[in-house]
Image (cartoon, rainbow, N blue to C red):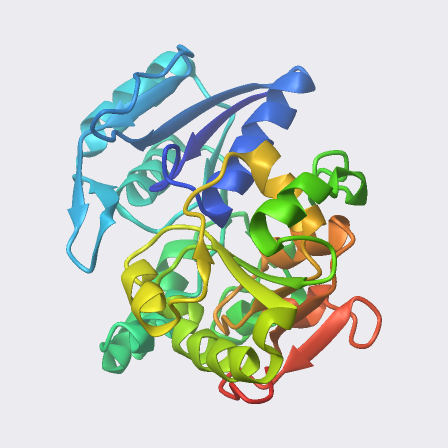
Amino acid sequence: MRIGIATDTYLPQVNGVTTVVRRIVTLLRARGHEAAIVAPRYPDFPPPDHEQERRILSIPFPLYPAIRLSLPNARPVAEFFDAFRPDLIHVHTEGPLGLAGRGYALRRGLPLVTSFHTNFPQYSRHYGVGVLAPAVWRWLTWFHHPAQQTLTPGGSVRAELERRGVPHAAVWGRGVDTRTFNPSRRNHGWRRWLAGGDDTAIVLHVGRLAPEKNLDVLIEAWRVAHQALGQRATFVVAGEGPMARRIASRLPFVRLLGFLPIQHLATLYASADLCVFTSSTETCGLVALEAMSSGVPVIAADAGGFRESVVPNETGLLVPPDDPRGF
């Protein structure tokens, strides 16, 4: 089968959507399918090393300059897909390239599958534009309505889409590579580097350091925990984003590691004692799956995708999202 994929976020951006799209492309090709992908072009990033990948000119997103959006130009997308001759179009995002892929499928009479990865209406309140949430929901409902199927990472997202008028939503659950994220990667050298040895607990947060991750709750929770635990715990953050400086200034005791390649990230997970995730906007929460696959318990917000991945009192604990002392 020949599958055309459109996404507004891809390498070198590192996030849940990029992770899922990369895995899909890799697995499709491994099973004998052909997959061609349209994604934004990023400055100083090498051109595609695969002929079935087209990068489109992009500009920084004003609210989050590290993210880039391609200009709304359907012609290069149509030319690329016409040359590829897809049997189906799979659109992963609702931005300009997703819109171009959607339009291409509808104009050519091709089956259209969409994915709902990101709860943008919830994001809006973290960027001071919560008043726009109803309009964003109307856009999302319109966007996904003509698809033959809209894939969601969990049942709560599917139910929300169905309630808002997207009757063809279906759950396509997420997983992680348990060979990569594995307890066997626990490394005492890493523990000595981070905490000085095995007697100090390593408390870890992994993810994009952005407002929608509810990081002010994490900051306050860790401030209180550090006061209580002192040298008995080391607090570590892996990730990049606009709130990194805020974390560094408010929590000078935190080890900020920035972005880590996947093999190093897997070692970090397995070498930790506990992972904490305060985001209430996750549709899936891949980070919790990665942590649990690494044999590490999770304390997460009792919201969104974490509710469907964390088993309370078995693989972790769920806490009300806006309760830093609870965390």
